[in-house]
Image (cartoon, rainbow, N blue to C red; front, side, top):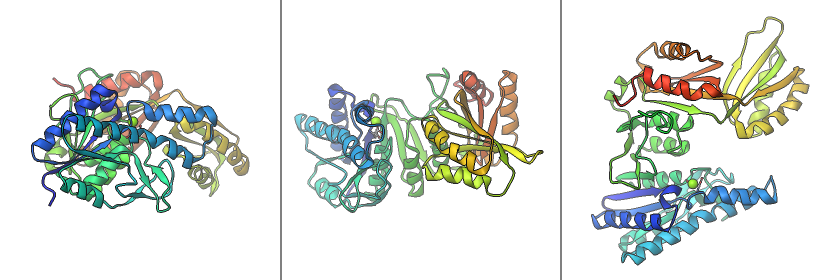
Length: 407
Ligand code: ASP
Ligand code: MG
């Protein structure tokens, strides 16, 4: 029987150097000594993953994805071994494992693989012997024994998957901030830490660019009701709990405001207003494995219409290349782009049961003379594209308008 099992995940900043690794070792030992079975998932030290990717890019701009996974999965192997050594040095028992060793089986989509099965037998065995088990985040293995990685930020996914399979009491996500905030506290000075937030809201926030959690991991946590606790590895304070929605949550109209400056707008000009044109444009983009965010198509008065959409800025070059052919094929006039945009969004499950949030948002932006260029909504989110230079101002005024500050 695994009693009071907890999964703790430590991000790259929490294990950025040897001193921090020793601190993490002390923390996990303290939980073990309180009577918990402890499974720890660790990310690569500091910026290791970025550094490895940039090494590869010095050789080729288009590395084989299999080899890229071979390379970037090494970062986590370094951190688990060092952490296990630190625990030993402090006089406790621990054992480190790679993803493959603990049976994290994924599909074969290198660099963004999905977990299809976890065989945690080895973990249970070692816990049974009283050891702290330390698992490399972000990696798995496909059925052909090829090493895969789970997408950037994928250690969160490892932690959630293990918490689900081991039926952990809680999955703690340790990072360098106290929890999830109403807005980025580096920009909005009076941003407040949230005590609790629903999976759905967290999923929107993460997808919109809040850095604390990998969006896909929140999706999986939600699906299997794995309770998440985002907290700081540098303090003992309680962080933010991410759970199923409870009715009190609906009373809060807006829980958070986000800003994303990493998107670019692409416009295909003078697209003939004919069936199949949009299918051609977006079919090509889907085949290129590019994620589209917002789409706008205007009514056509002349038989032609402009189609605009946004993509992540780092997909822009590829998108423009793909659009060149599409433009020719569908008889459009050309394609233009705009990188000077920012997306500001408000998120809250209270929106489902209250109206007027959109109007309030638009009015608030207008009051600061901020022009809205695109709008998109979901059940619990409204996003607006504005000029990049106005992004932070927009975030601040919305934070204030919806009363999210500390006062
Ligand atoms: N080290 C990987 C990354 O930087 C995985 C993670 O940090 O969760 O994306
Ligand atoms: Mg990292």
